[in-house]
Length: 496
Image (cartoon, rainbow, N blue to C red):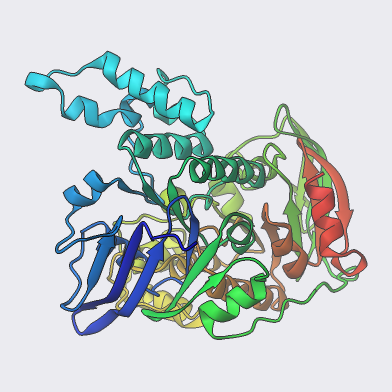
């Protein structure tokens, strides 16, 4: 027995300034289905979602059906009334407001006579959270919640709007594996209750785990609709990019190379304890582990943002003590934050300004920043890292996630570091851009840069590091050579 689609679109065409963003795309979702919308950045995924939610109007000839009824002209108001909700990657929540206020916001807006019905807001929030099977203190300010719980608040807000179809844009981009597993359980609960979910994610493993079907777009065109059963990550990657990527272990020995960073007994109570390792010139050291492993806390300490209570750090054999990140930068340590959007880059500023942010002292001439020196540095690194831009004066936010990350890396390379710490460098970037970033990492290591690669995704360190440290609850649980164990063995150790 065939199921009538909840949503059905045909012949969707959208053009911006002569550029065809969508080229006659068809798309459909069944009731209660978990459907993956896959494709590289710039393939048209966001444009399609904005057509579905009435933000963009498609060209003539488009057909739009919801619940079997033709829609002549979709608008944001109509989409919301039909139960179409979108949870964007930035969540669009209010940090100063309470959990209840964020979830039941529409009750505050629509209150009679302009009055806020606090009880109605709290009842709506509690009902939505109960439906998700989660317990969160609704009176807490949202800013006090970790990112995983903020995702849940965003989903609960969609349910208050009586959602029938929820789009989730990169919902796990900032989550650890354990948080991701929890979110996937919630998605399954939504699906079981009849809510259709469209999952947009660059993490292919979770896409294959959670989805029933997937629609793949490439360069604004429909590649096809495929059942997820039997699909592999390599096949999805090929469909998305039109290319094959060879995942192979690249680990090599660096035992004879100079020790650039030496860490002995480094400890910060409640974060990490007795951490010791050496990092050699040209080596990429992977650090992986689950939530609470202490990976980022360790990185921030190595970068001078936190002070250890005990232990020693030495760079090229000389003991160092950092009172700030400025001390670390002067010593040759660079740190690429896992939170690119709020910590790694200044989104309103230009590409050029972001790129030179950490190296302004190198651009001075007579006490002033030299425009010529700045232009030279920007031109060099944009070319060296293959950043695709319009002009250097364009805002950084106009770039794709992968190109923003390249600029963030270039920002630190411009200081001429000895040690580069990459904390989750592929968060929010697609599979093609990931391959490009790791190609950059390999070239930098080949040039002698010592690199620490931090990721909660075991395959990333397995295929891109020479050695792997596995952290559990702030301690080193094991050290591995990718050439001497399988990826399955590493994943079993990490997820045990």
